[in-house]
Length: 150
Image (cartoon, rainbow, N blue to C red; front, top):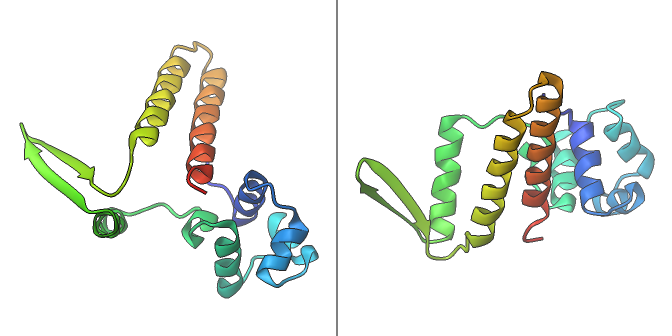
């Protein structure tokens, strides 16, 4: 389920341990405006959304909850390759990717834990409970992604 802009602002602000007032000060709006945005009573203009994203240390796309197209994924991958000395090779019909300037050890370990949580959730017989467990695993991994390296 896609989250609204307001839900994303509130969730990420909470993950950052920031109050509405602190976010408002960083963005240059009132805390009442932030409250309106978080409750989806109003939608921030593009320039305000950009300032909110910057204050929270995320991309505006994260706040918008945008799905990434294959074209966007390739562009982002190229940006990461350029920034972190990405390398690629074809071996046995598989494409291997590594980065000389990016430590992926912690990511790999956390991703493996996430995959294990998903596998465990799949064992749940009750569909509603299974989906709850899968959502909890995704939310936990996304939270780790948003907070790691900040």
